[in-house]
Length: 402
Ligand code: ADP
Image 1: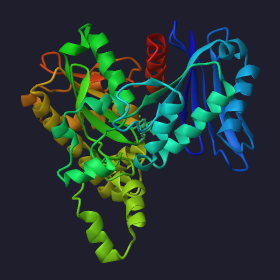
Image 2 (image 1 turned 180 degrees about the vertical axis):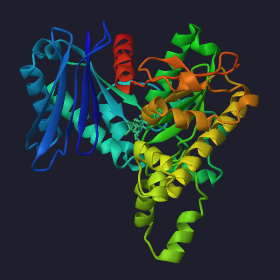
Image 3 (image 1 turned 90 degrees about the horizontal axis):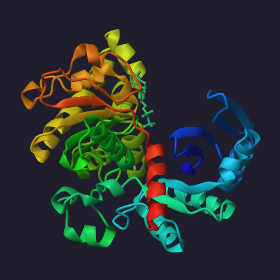
Image 4 (image 1 turned 60 degrees about the vertical axis):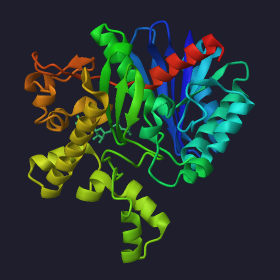
């Protein structure tokens, strides 16, 4: 049983073909710069001998439909014709499901309409997701297609957690509330933790930390997200590569008054020129850590700020959950940076969280424990796999006929 997973951006399409019996990725790749004269395609596929081969190609790709057709052709050329003909389903990542979608759904005209209505909440992402959905429906009309929403996992947050203390009419008229993102990743690592412990997810209280270019924390009780750090948009919460995370809400008005910058310019500043980059000029954590090792003052400051903010969220979610079984690190930084993991948990021994230096410093691609043996709270590193989670949810949704 094979699933094609599509994660589409405004000028890119990422894809994976996953075999659900073996969990093997049969092929994966990305097209970038769609709409520009030279689009590029990287495609990696599993060969009969069990090894992967990769190719890079370029050509002009006018739009997502052409992009998808190119992917189909390259998959054909690399021996995947049968796999694509026999697709069980196609799973689409959709960023914003608003309050309408609490779980994945089979895509039909009504669903497309609803995703379109959510565009004001995700003006960059939902249109890009929609063009890929429409292209895939045109090219694979017989294959059931499922939308899996980044926001859905957080839809069970209680009202006191998702409301902002602003006039209630803003919620009623403009859907202003906290939604949360990275839901697929938070959900995936929560399930993985339960499997690792051999315990039902229902019994576990978890703090999940997705630390990549974008970063977010979630408080997960019994497999449900009851709070998360991102809000109406993915700007709120933790400090990120280029996003500021939590700030005083007056800050944009103050900057506008002092600098004369427009709201659009300030919006762009807070999303693209802030976070780690705003402080030290770099947003790649590897570069920042290496500069900090050389005692670069601003790199050190940005690391201090990044870890301090994570620690504050661990404390807050510990209180929200009333105690935890595990804190989980995932995402490019969470999976790979021992120093960020240990510093974010520094001084939390009284909460039962103590990191073991040796375990923390032993890299692995597997789920692993990095807490001291006697620590009451487990600390886990779990590689995220949003594509696999989308594939799993696609199968479940199609099988249940939802
Ligand atoms: P995205 O949110 O774009 O999916 P990723 O989850 O891939 O991002 O995370 C990217 C971040 O992970 C970058 O800041 C990168 O520097 C960081 N990263 C990757 N490998 C390491 C490493 N070995 N040590 C520290 N940071 C790392």
